[in-house]
Length: 128
Image (cartoon, rainbow, N blue to C red; front, side):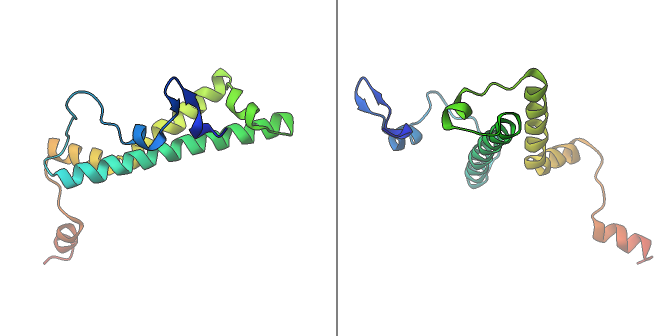
């Protein structure tokens, strides 16, 4: 039986139904434009999947280096040591910071003094 067919009290797990299930409560919105919200939501979902894939690949690399072999059971049972877990955590923080860099920069720009665009700065330097 594959992972997506894990039985429960009601029969096989319906992955598609669960993936589309609506969370309880009101959804938080961060931007005024619903299209921007949708794109951000999709982007963060893909980013989360990529982070999980990166963590799994890191596990495989670690197991190959330390044991010289890897099985699916080894991957599922792997527990990183504290140093390894700390490196993973740092990577994840840096990864999210890179993804959300534009959002952070725009928030900082709104909070601080207005800076000229590169075109405006070039015009000033050129004496125009």
